[in-house]
Amino acid sequence: MFHDLDSTLMAILDDQAAPTELRDADVSFETPDRNFAPGQPTVNLFLFEVKENRARRDQVPHSEKVADLFVRRFPPLRVDCTYLVTTWSNQPGALRVAEEHRLLGQALQWLSRFGTVPDVGDYLKGSLIDQPFAPLTLVAQMDSKPNMGEFWSALGTPPRPAFTLLATIAMAFPLELPEGPPVVTKEIRLEIKDVPGTQEVVFEIAGTVREAATLAPIGNAEVTMLELDRTVQTDGEGRFRFAGLEPGSYTLRAAATGFVTLDQAIQVPRTPLDTYDVSLPI
Image (cartoon, rainbow, N blue to C red; front, side, top):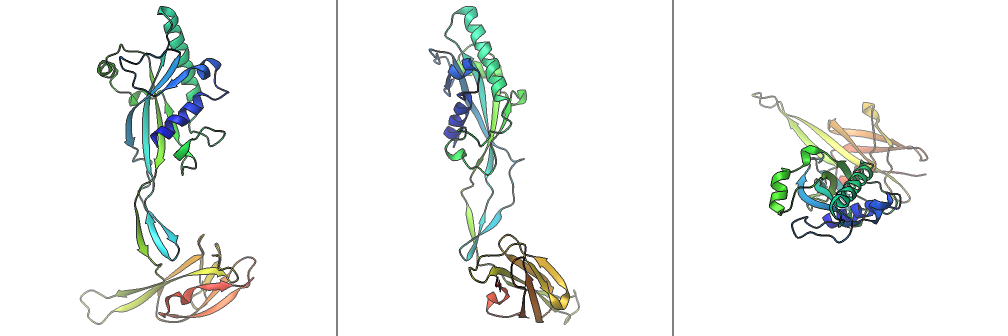
């Protein structure tokens, strides 16, 4: 994952639209310690911090139907990857300083163009292709910097000008929990507290509207329970639900654009469990 982010950032810096001097510079992800001595102009991106961005993570798992079962999947982690960006030159004295400052300014201007890494051209690499969220970037946010004196002291090298680049990527959460088959009938028993014998039973039912010929689910279909004059709309997978039903006989009317409207008698409660599904002919 992180090496794919490295490759993505390298592709951005190597873009043909980037400034020529920046594009011609080498790109390195090595630790810029006392032993780092590139032999040519170099932009160094040192990944010094990785942490979860809880503010951007969706905490609510979602259910997904796989064959005849529902599986609970957890949303991806949102991970902040913070790089320290420095530039290096092998020129002597003032020429070295001028080249490093020029490269640093070009890198800052170029990387600041990308609030998100666009899914165009050949920027995104490996696991960053087809992410659920476009990778976000923040450039030169001073609050993200480490204590620079301690940082350079730990690396054993003199301090040098730098800026931070923060990229937020999505990382799949490797956990899914089977939930079992969809519930199509739910029985709810209500009783007034401290009053024996006042129990009331109500039901919740669910079903799916499908195309009769192909059994493909029909989204945005209207399903009406005629006796109660209650209408609901199916979701993208053709599912509908009615709650607060007393036991008895009802009629479901299913209607969708391009299909024949169909009335179907049902009994609540009733088995088998799939008797609330409706198939619409064209």
